[in-house]
Image (cartoon, rainbow, N blue to C red; front, top):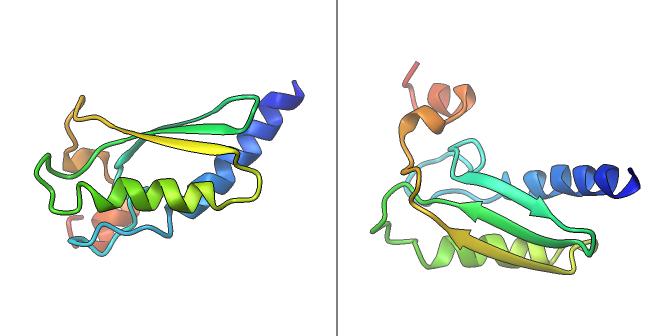
Length: 107
């Protein structure tokens, strides 16, 4: 049970870090935008993050995953981090949080 609790706590910390990373084109963080599909934590505190980008030819396609990886890796509890980009399912505005939609005047 202990691992599950630890990974949940670490998962929440990672989400807080992810919320400090913004899509350069939209003034909303990547978590609220719905770009993070999954955060997996194994018992060795190696993290795998499954994320997407707003468009496949997003100009920051290279830099955003790197930023995610570096910020998560810099956390004390994290041993390693791998970011995988997927376009399945493709991102759409329905994945955004209410907060993000409000911020962008979509509600």
